[in-house]
Image (tube, rainbow, N blue to C red; front, side, top):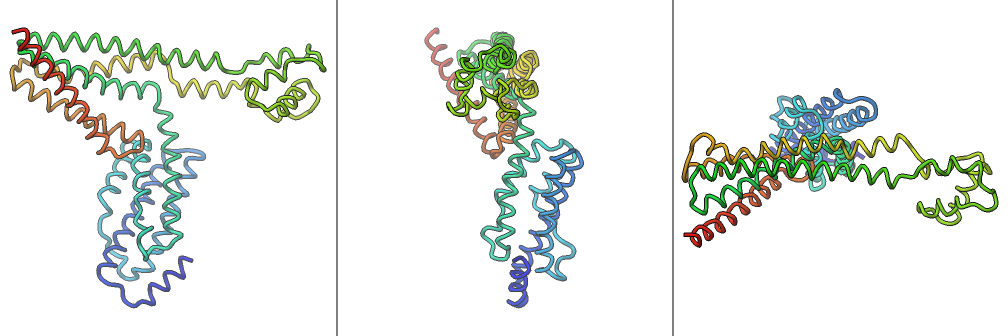
Length: 370
């Protein structure tokens, strides 16, 4: 199909300069994407490595299409798009998790669906590539659960809550020393509260997994059960099997069949390890939450720590918090596969909105007290 479309394009005559520029850009981007997947593959092993190399091979097939169309114009190509350059740079430095999240968006925004010079097969490839990259990115996000999740959201909570607290106190008209002491108190109390809450949350989730996981009781009890009158059918029905499947599973346990057709209904140690790893360690989550909440909460306090007062301190604090909110928002966007810019701006709006509200309330309170 690709060769047929290529011949048809050649039959139209010499391509227009605008077409040549577009094709050269496509070719440069395809080369950059193939190189990106190869770079990521070098850091992986096993199945993930083979998948990334498969994506690279597909991008090289697309290169052939554009080279055939361009002919002698396929030399001295322009630089790839800034997005592809950034992805390659990130891949060399940080590895795959954030890069794959960004690559997922790049694959989903392929222009081939709207460009008649690209074949339908190429457009379909890019659509499938988005799903492949989405699945690979999901694996990476799972590995960043637990402590990393607590770190990102802990830092963001520290930024917003302590900045809002400081702005609220500043609105009352109290001195810089009072604002500083309030900020430090908010830092310590918030960090301890976050750590305690994260510890309890993760520990409770792990205990819930333990409490709801099937045990080996059916295996231990099976040899002593009455073959004709036993409660194994009830066990498997309670675990979600239909009556017919539950009866078959019970007979398996009692040795009536040689097969073990539904092993997932019994205790599986490997599955337990995977689920607990996904939840993470309660101590790791608590420690990460405490440290990163404290770091986030420290940022709006820094100008006051270094002696700034009045509007100068407010301006510095606002600027520093704004930059930090943009960074945490972009990080959350990357992890969720959404637009980093959109998430960063949303985070900024929420943080500044909360601070503005508390500042106005503080102003009203200050006037009332006066």
